[in-house]
Length: 85
Image (tube, rainbow, N blue to C red):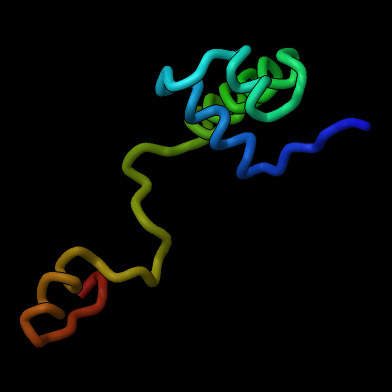
């Protein structure tokens, strides 16, 4: 029977590989899957990260309606200003 890894399990495996906390063989043994599964997890995570970075727009900022840094600062002092004011 094939063991299925949840997305969070895949993410944790990927983090362990990136941090150097585990080798592919160690991650495969700990997860009870084949090494090729771990290699694929690493490959898909890298491709997903690169695609997300390519799609990001530097300087685009937050979506409208979010509080500005001024708001957070002034709210802590007792006054409230919406973003754009």
